Length: 386
Image 1 (cartoon, rainbow, N blue to C red):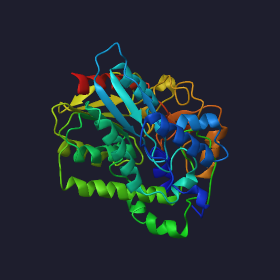
Image 2 (cartoon, helix red, strand yellow):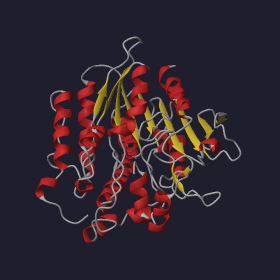
Image 3 (cartoon, rainbow, N blue to C red):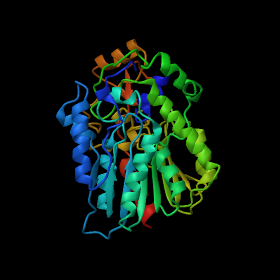
Image 4 (cartoon, rainbow, N blue to C red):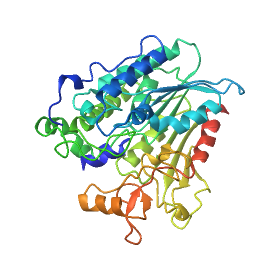
């Protein structure tokens, strides 16, 4: 069951001293130097299946605001567990078009090899995020935070510590997991069985890990516990906030997230967009509003063979080279070998979240993009710019 968390939220034995996270580069002087240092580190620690081109995809990046529109400020973007900065590529481009400078960072242990996650600590992720935020605040412009999955947990924590943050953009926020009854024991389990499958498995995704060190789930769990303690000291998010999630997310506790949004987010410029199976609807374009601050949108697009929306699919547009309509990467559902291999071998697929049932026996792979993606970009303008 832990596999589902680590694959979706984003988704060991001993290693040599060269595979420690202690030397993962930190931002000190300028972003180019930092990025070059990260590139060198990732290339030196990359797993065999990762090419140099794959490494480039995982790197932290900065993009500059469109000079032809009014300047709006800076966005610091934080990725999820076992992911990389690449998950923010599509939204980053959209944000620059709206007038934002954008920086997407890479957390320790990510972007090179799952072995790097064997000994990483959640405190290092928080430290990296705080360091980048401090550097960006020195410019004196408005700062916004974007967080995907685990990154949304970190972004929310930073917002609680920094009330001057201008806004929060949170996608598939992993505040609480349906798998917590497993995760609470994962720290103990990792001492005896560091890898979920006894070691590395097939690594065919160039921007996230498939192999699962138990420690990664344990660090995520401790991070969420830390945020829950932090809520007790400051229990409101008062800045504008846009939250987007799938009602079919198989790992994130959707009910918990909705309750958190309704009880803790208080700005008049807040919005929760939830994608749900639209049943007979195949357009996914008719919004339904609840309580003024929530919208329901359909995740079903039958002409595209999309049954519902997945955890990570909300991050990519249909034009994305790797995960869009003409996707180069197939993400197969199923943590049982026969189910997984049936998906890998199938010439045709349905697409949905983990555990989505096939309507006709044809294999279901993970939905990797959102056909309704541009509706979310419109909400970015509504929440943060109007």
